[in-house]
Length: 269
Image 1 (spheres, rainbow, N blue to C red):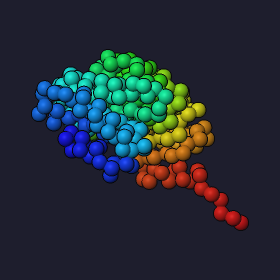
Image 2 (cartoon, rainbow, N blue to C red; image 1 turned 60 degrees about the horizontal axis):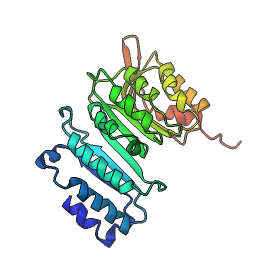
Image 3 (cartoon, one colour; image 1 turned 90 degrees about the vertical axis):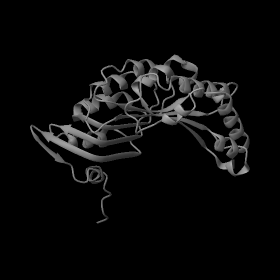
Image 4 (tube, rainbow, N blue to C red; image 1 turned 30 degrees about the vertical axis):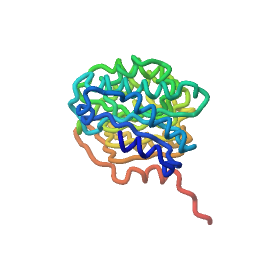
């Protein structure tokens, strides 16, 4: 925090575009949260004074933490959000964006409680699921308020794959009409199920990223063909893709080649 305060007072930050606030176990060393909101507000204000490019604030939770107690970071999250809200007051017409990365389901309730004014500024959300997550209510309540959401990432938090049911529930709650990017990782699916999830965003979607995905019924190739025909994407990223048919599972070698083959430029005759 002290280093950030010093840096944002100096001219070398004139090209600063984004401030990332990390919420992790280090927060436990500062249980009092003394003046956290005021100090963050000072950092944001200084950054705006030294850089005309500063337009993004990202809240990042520890991506390697799997066992945080429910509400562990509630007070810190609240202080960060209140600082952001105060900073953005009077800047309603500006293009400041908020990112929330590596958040777990039980931390979403705190953000939801802080209201629409903050969430309407959220540009991207990266959500981590765990196999034992049985309810997605907190993120379902949050997403309708994120009316300007452009990017969402839904990722399995462990090596175990997820069924598509919780993913479907989450994507159905998205209210943004301009979602441009969706990223999924660690999910079992079929072409038809994934098609159903992506279809509501067909008009606006520009980027799809899939990794550690298992396609049932050997449906990966047909999914790529469907995307190629129906979507006007700027980027499709496929990594660590598997297919399963009955009990047989195989890795798809070079999954991107399926996409490239469909978009190959014919050689001149």
